[in-house]
Image (cartoon, rainbow, N blue to C red; front, side, top):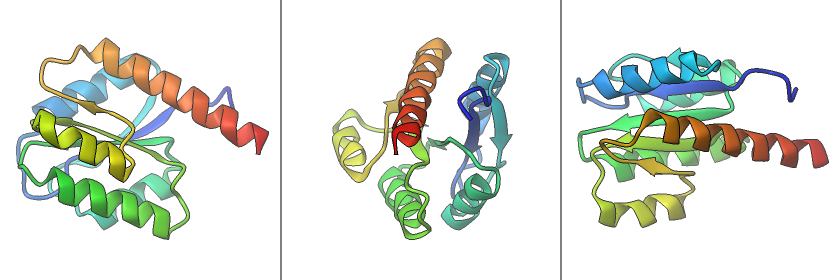
Length: 140
């Protein structure tokens, strides 16, 4: 299991139609050797969670520019817990006010990356987060 490539779902929830950032990070993850499942635009939280479970994803990266970040993080994390898949790491990026980030972290987000964050920072964070997750799973 530990030799398995990192599998990450990159998702665009809701009606936000701007996906350039999601495509940039998806390509960066792919170029870093990860398996990327890009959900496309206008996905519901239920679709995103179902995709992550079906694809045996290690993580879900949510790209949000619409201002509905609290709703989507709360709903996606809640659905993962309800389906017994709370081990899937949830992180996000986009235009999220700095003051809202602590609340998202309290909900269970692993990290929030704002505009201008180097893709290498996000890649390194995800690699470390998945490594820690797999180490916990192997001890259990």
